[in-house]
Length: 292
Image (cartoon, rainbow, N blue to C red; front, side, top):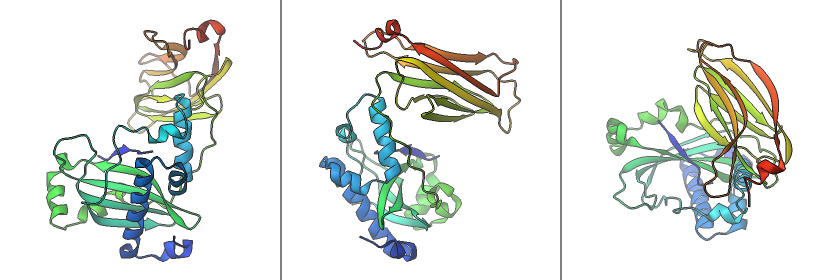
């Protein structure tokens, strides 16, 4: 399984025709320059080297957590890992996207003795340059045979792993949301179903056979807040599973528990709505419990 850790000059024609041997140094250079921007807290360099959709996503997450942007971009527990002692074993390009896989002792700066694993970096072409998108850490502890094969230079793993291949699809850049006044999260429990939720027509969420909470982009606002969702069975589901959709308001006052502002819930065996549109009211009385 790939676990994702987002650490929040070529002409485009050259990008499209570059061979793997030409592409690897360019991608490596882009990432190391991006890493330098993070370490040196260089906002202009970070903006120049980060994919536009990723910049917007980082902005939206931070301001929805009521953290300062761009200052909080650089507020990381440890710097992104260096590629200096890693070996680039695989490069994939499709259209305006590329991926590069690096093998070796990946040091996240948290101490201990790093073991040999994989770091898969994603990039997108933007205005004739490669921009850094995201990093995916592949822990090979559960794949000892793959670790041995890679160490020996046998690269079959990459051919068999779609996550290591460029998709050719550049994610759309979401609109930037204004800073949140109140922090909110949407929680969904949906075994056997795919549920999509939208808050205030801005914050969009998708859950599949899941039990998860996600930050509401833009947060909650005073007064009326709209909530809509769709639900449909997925392969293997019976349509009779329990289901829950909730919106929590997160208090910034120490000792105050999250407040359930919206809830839709069905028990196992009960019919579930395929679509629902509702709302909740964030009153001054509720607001007083959220912020000082």
